[in-house]
Amino acid sequence: METWPIFRMRRALHMSVLLLLFWGPALRAGSVGASPVIFVESGVAGHGIGAERIDTCMRLLAQEMGVANPLPTIVVIHIDKREADKVGLKNVSAKLRINSGSDRADNYYELWLVGSPTTFEYTYSLAYLLQAHFDLHHPEAEQRAVVERVVRHLDATIAAKAMR
Image (tube, rainbow, N blue to C red; front, side):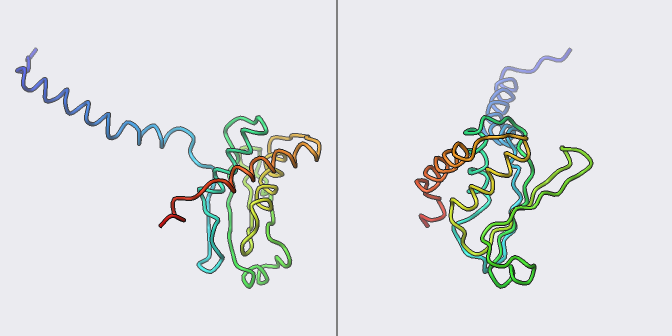
């Protein structure tokens, strides 16, 4: 067995520590808690809504409702009112579609956001989605209280993009 001179061992140890310091958090972040949100937005849809905000909303609702991971996959499609008219979404700001697969694991959901919906409108839609996915039966008053708590939290949060 070949032995390494002390300077090579130190260098190898040093490199290992550096690699763990720089790559360790990135490796953990990618493997744990991946976002269930896929966000698609047209260029003229409006602002204030993004994948991070929807993801945060979903996670806060899940925490408030006491549901466990994995969260359902959701495709959020953010369009403006003209585009909404073309696809038959008239006079709505949020529309939820459930796309059923062969089993619950294959299900995915679509949340269509039109223009600039309020935080309450998309939070309420996401709460309904979680109730449907996890087969929860909360009274309307309890669901509304959960939605209002999450809305207050989201409205009190400032996005880093807004500070630019």
